[in-house]
Every structure is written in structure tokens, then in C-alpha cells.
Amino acid sequence: MPKARNRFERAVQVLRWLKTEFPLDRVRRIEWIEDLRDEDGEQLCGRVVERGKGLVILMSEKSCPTISTTIETLLHEAAHAELWDAGLGYYHGDRYWVHFGRMSDAYEHHGFSDSRTFEVD
Image (tube, rainbow, N blue to C red; front, top):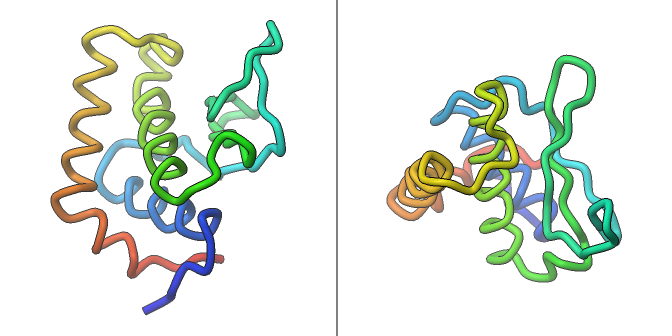
């Protein structure tokens, strides 16, 4: 079983697991940004962006200093990615929270351990 050596590798494992459980086929990868900010200069933990025909989850190294913060941010952004094609990628309404809740519940129920079997590279 591969062992994640840091929060970056752990996030890769969790994303690979999420893609087996949820319709996240368009998500291509995670990109780490040292200090991620929005257009107004506000610091972000993560964000989803469209690159070509796929989606990339951007994660802030500065705002995600621990594994638990990293995983929570990844689940948050994955829920946005799941709603992306419905035009609700930046939405935080009821539908978003349903998707985020399902992902969080699945991760807590079995994803925490199941994701550890995924490759990190």
C-alpha cells in the first residue's frame, strides 16, 4: 500500500478515490499555488478553474498547512467541480451543500481508509 509522505501526496490519493465515487471525470489534477488569491486579492484555500476541456483544482500551500485542512478544501472544491457543468461551479447554495455533504460523508465513512490504497505519483 503506498504511503503519502505529505499533504500534497495525500490530496492526490483522496482525489483519485473521489473520482471513483463521484462524477469527476473532467477533473484532471491538483495544482499547488504558494499563495492563492482571488481577483480582489482575497486569500483563498482553493478554487476550480477550467483548462481546455478539463478542470483543475488549485490549492493554496499557504492556506492549507495541515492534512486535515487540505482534505477539507479538496472536498469543498470537488463539490464545486461536480456542479461545474450545470453552471453552478461557484455556487454555495442548497445543491452545493448536498454535494459537499455526500462527499464528506463518504470520505468519513470509508474514503479515509480506502483512499490510502491509491498511488501518490
